[in-house]
Image (tube, rainbow, N blue to C red):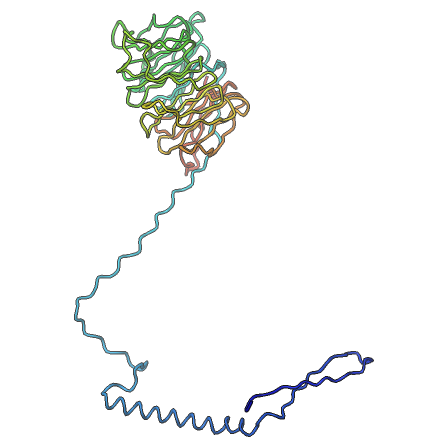
Length: 430
């Protein structure tokens, strides 16, 4: 083929005694036309320049005929400013600012440990409550103590005689001033915490200790060891206005719904009842709205959801947390926590549920709702965490355990930005 370069290879043997015994490949250039290649390198370059000159002359003539500038792109002078036919467009809006992501909440251990000597170790009692005036009430044997979380002051509200004690339940009214105290001898006292004066005594509702209390405006609902639940109107002399009969054993937990229409009760008979004020009457005290029998041990922990009406969480000694739709009576979920469930609290700002537990870890567990994925476990108590209550703003949580300590936890808020730690001035209940 003309003009093509052919290669032939010759093999030359090299003496094997030499150090580098290699094959050499030598090309054969006899077929290359060096004259043609030299002519293309010299004369071809001259013809290329002549062609470029001819093209340049042609472009000039074409430009003159068409009356267009000879240089389309010029960097020497700036192009003339075009005349504005349409009004100028408004400047583009600034790019949207990315919202800073919500800071990740840091869940830490307890903020403060407080001594609570002589606390009764009983699963069915309710000995801790945090009132709307930011005062914590705690029952220690025969006495009730008040601790003001605003100024770290503590005071003794009442100490009862041995024939009345021990104190078996405490509960603040919604005004944060009046407090109900249930006693072992079946009576209930109403106290004014501001003046530390007893206002009245409620008798005749029960035949045994009163371990559960729940306020609904001026109605104080009490649950007793006799299985009875009683509504007491504290404004009138004949205070018993309604009785609920459904539990065969002691009532361990009572909670009114946020609307005040439904009452949840848990008992030592492993049963949860939902009572509706419009259904129950004096003529039919056993007519409950729903009766849940799926727990396998005493039910004390009850918590109504703050963000979804008719959603109730219940927990008990069978290690289970169950979710109920109290409108339909359907069980929505059931989670085996692995240890006794003593108390439940909903986060008021997020869809989260906090539970306190007994043996063997004695921990607090934070759950994400509705997936019920475990978010955190908080340890510190050395015995079962029997009681748990929430601050008025919903951020702090107070717990009391059988290890005779009360602890304050920063569970539902971000860490404090200042170096000041809350509750630093207080380290004992009494």
